[in-house]
Image 1: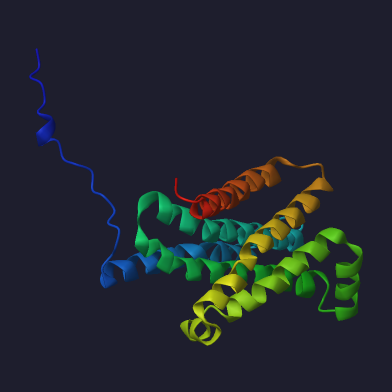
Image 2 (image 1 turned 120 degrees about the vertical axis):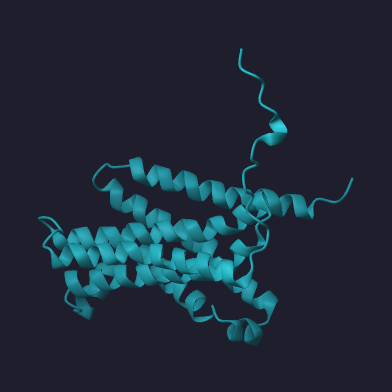
Length: 221
């Protein structure tokens, strides 16, 4: 019969601390920054090696749009992750993920406007006006611009913390617009699998905030 293992002798799993040292945070941030660039690097590599498929424009546009939505979800997930884990340091990554959302959204827009429509602004305006899913997507992108423009500490001080927070709550509306844009686009091909996944994720991320908001305003019993 094997002797019972003393539970006290077992190594305890390392816990992620609530705060990171400056050096550790810089390493985590650098690693995540590099990972966030990988989708763009992959597209460049595929383009250089003739790997974009039979319809390269569509492949690029769709890929950039999908990664925009992914980074938008990651950005929205930062605060709930902080609430669930107590990791205060993750809040310092939210701005970076938000800017990557804008980065991929800008590339997505430029891919449509430049590669697909050749920067023909008359055609671009007509496309925005007559195709509802593009109208919604363009509205989401336009609303992202002031958030990216006010992402610096200097802009936080200039606007004041409360006004800055009010402005950046637009991200919730942007998330809904982006989801409708994606859903509408996929509906044209009767493909609802991926839009449903993103709808559930965004619904949960916004729902957690709503529950928290209601609890914070409930009078103490």
